[in-house]
Image (tube, rainbow, N blue to C red; front, side, top):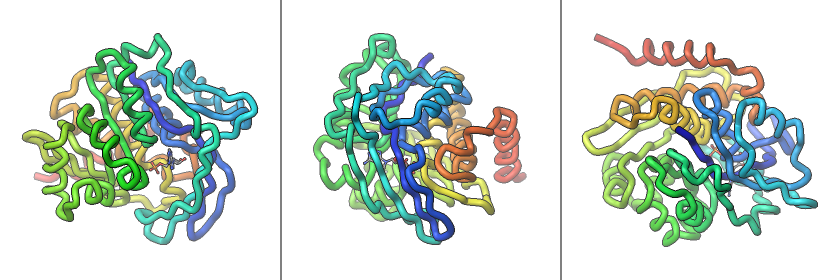
Length: 301
Ligand code: AMP
């Protein structure tokens, strides 16, 4: 099995009510690949500038992430995003976005990636997501993420991508924007009528809701006293979820439910430090322990 992830590798400036960190490494692809690397050997497709730190590339390689599809643009500047959080970690404001090398990025899937079993279209321009879909031969599972920016600015392209994916990851605000429906159960059903077989509604510090044919499943988020930086929680969720499915190779209802728990586990670790910091020390043993903790949290007779 193999998992290909297409998305952003970025510099982020993050401000929380307690701290500000300038130009740390982030990006949807980075978080997703790191989370997935605990289960499989993800292959990434992304672009960075020459300013991107080599030691971070070495770290990604050390985590067995395949960088063949990562383009380094000579003299280019890496995509930059600045976000600010209030006291409610679910509410964030984009302060600025500088596309830089992303402006002219046309993702090219290396031949060694084209037979991928699972394809994840992380949050990027839906036109680019569409071009990637055309390059991967016969994936068994395609999943996508998006954001308000694309729902508002490129609704037609987004709908086309949606028709061709199996799983949509979206937060509650995005799913309401996509469907014009306030009730999340009704909104989930509306999405299921548009293409995806499964919709995963991420509810930040309140967990996630999963809708599919004959499937409704909910998981709470790990109750954490130390939310340092909520950035990347959504992408880490997708990485844990898809990495696990790539490992077990089957996509039944039971697999999906377990994958959702692994997604929540990985997201819960990511937010314990700024940027990708927590992945520097995170071990498989810690992941296994938190998975069991989740089981205890939600089980009752
Ligand atoms: P998440 O917190 O999981 O929703 O993802 C946060 C990551 O998304 C940050 O590390 C940003 O670098 C990245 N990001 C923000 N805006 C965009 C955008 N317009 N295109 C691609 N990636 C973005």
